[in-house]
Amino acid sequence: MINKYKIDAIFELADITPFSKERSQGIRNLIPKNVTYESRYDPFLLPIGTVMTPYDTAYKVYTPFLKATVKSTVPKTNTVPI
Image (cartoon, rainbow, N blue to C red; front, side):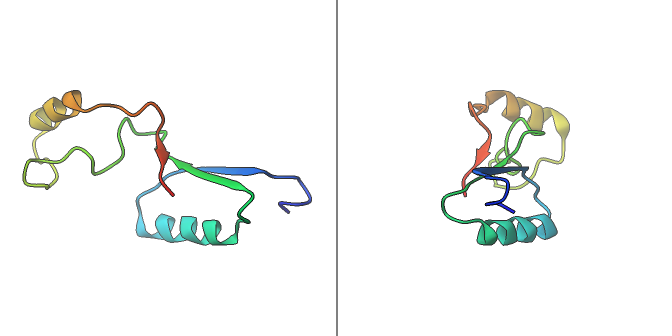
């Protein structure tokens, strides 16, 4: 299909579920090296897991989470490293 339709890039929205991670890896394994593959966190301001407490755990109270998020730098692009 890649050759038939002259596909040179494949994009997907990143997902964090184990099923989705496995599916994405399977897709990456099937794509030839000359085809660009990018997974993006478009629905998220920041990649999940980047705003954590000082103890590297998830926030359980919204206000401290909000304060930490406001201090975070939003990447210019949300491309996930592959």
